[in-house]
Image (cartoon, rainbow, N blue to C red; front, side, top):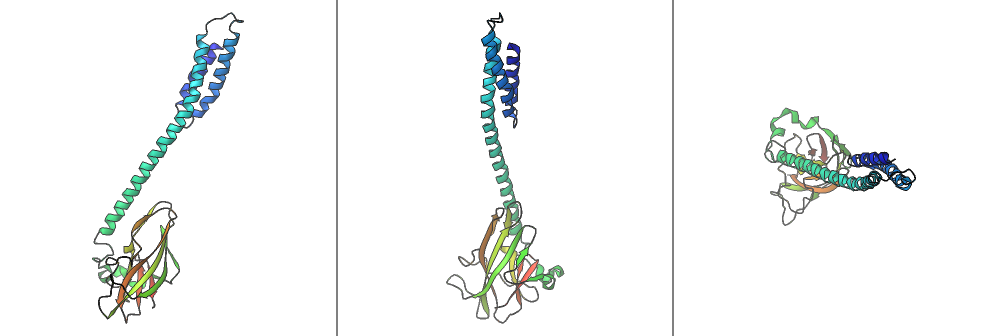
Length: 250
């Protein structure tokens, strides 16, 4: 019994250091403690007096039970910290990559001319949606909730009397299983030929509440963007990400 108690105590110590299965150390530890106690209690009747082995067996078994609990919390803490570091690193990398992408002059911003010079961006090829209808892509759903005239403000006015302002209310929801970057530059106002009107989103203040950001899984955001168009143009469209169009009928 003395030897068995000692061996079980050593086995329990070893198991307690193994991640995820350390709690199983309780099985040999409990048996080792019982055998150690019985060994000490019956030692005199069995004619033995070496108490070192059962005592060591009891101590190592008890120590393994304490270590198993402590190490479970340590491993859980380290795992949580590591996960946060990795997740935040990935998110920052995603954000930085997308931020660089949207700052690129080749994208659909003020410096992009692909509607004017690229046959692939023919407005007629885009699927047309109605106001309030969800537009689905691989990562999100987009809904143009409302399109209306905007009289302007102290901060924002149309270029001249031939133009008018258009305020667009947009809702975007992340339907992917990872954080997804959205950008206000995914939206543009084009005429019937697919040529961009000069956007106003870079020159507004409180008028444009939809901003580029990283949406968490399941997160949605609603905001506004402001554009300007010719007053007599009744055949223009809000274009989303070169894949969908919604006619501006105001």
